[in-house]
Length: 40
Image (tube, helix red, strand yellow):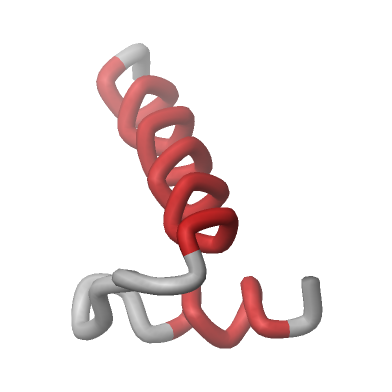
């Protein structure tokens, strides 16, 4: 779980391929973020 803030810091300059569980968490968090942005 310590890696997630580091990965998120580098968005949009990074794309997670592996491990799959990190990829899924990042994708889910990004979807939620974008959904909230669109609701403003």
